[in-house]
Amino acid sequence: MKTYTFHVHGMHCNACVVLTETELKDHALVESAAADLKTCCVEVQGNFGEREAEDVAAELSKVMEPHGYKLSTVKEQKGVQWSDFKIALPVALGFMALFVILQKLGLVNLISSGNVSYGTAFLIGAIASVSTCMAVVGSLVLSVSANFAKEGDAVKPQILFHIGRLVSFFILGGLIGTLGSAFQLGATGTFVMSFVVAFVMLILGINLLDVFPWAKKLQPTLPKFISNHLLEVKKLNHTLTPVLLGVLTFFLPCGFTQSMQIYSLTTGSFWGGATTMFVFALGTLPVLALLSFSSLGIQNKAKSGVFFKTAGLVVIFFALFNLINSLVIIGLIPPMFNF
Image (cartoon, rainbow, N blue to C red; front, side):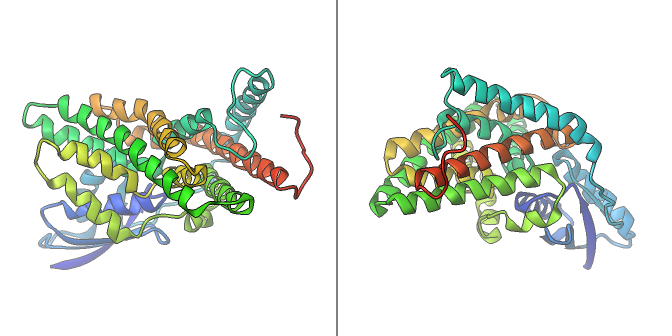
């Protein structure tokens, strides 16, 4: 039994930490695995005989590569791809301008006074589905596909997974909204929660830009030991396992999901929280469905720096806009825009 320390190429957030540890622990020769986001390293203990560390890294990389990661004895030399902004910035500005124009014309209501509309929730869900933040959910989808395909039933489990996810997001979102009503949040309380949502979204947007590594530490998440135990459910071989996995995705470490959960709390009603979380989950459905029923891999999305930077700028735009509108509502600043 030996202990190895490897650098993890492609690690971005706490979801990556959970996914790395979970996948490596499933390897037959690995006894334990502990990843660290700060160093982007993983400490692996296992019995690999007399093989060199480079060979062990290559062996374990086969497990991680389908999820967009690679293990190495050499630290990843990662620089900021500033050239991506040449395309990302004008595309994002055009995207924002289109939304503002459509809102001005009254055709859509993606931005409202301190509130997250259903259109915004759907858009955030769509962005979340292609971010590294949803890597764990993508891993579960791929796991369900692989495990049940071996038994000759590749379609039904996937449908059950997505139904379980949509239904649970509706019900649990409603419970969060109901919980919010019990607290009877006043104007100040609502503003504080709106500020938290905007702050979480702002951090998520900054992380998508992949420019400031320190921002990773500010992203909220569930305690790692809880997430690791939740993922153990995927090892159960039962007809209802896909449904249960879909339900558990509500609790996995995704900042986008958590920002919507916080907002659902501020709605103060079952229907408000339920529909917000349902629409958010609906926004993630197209990409997750592609993961289920095709060979689309997470690593293919992870290479698109321009896309992530564009999405990051759009998320930052929504975060700042909602924050400004919240400040206007409580009278701290005068109206800056006529929407």
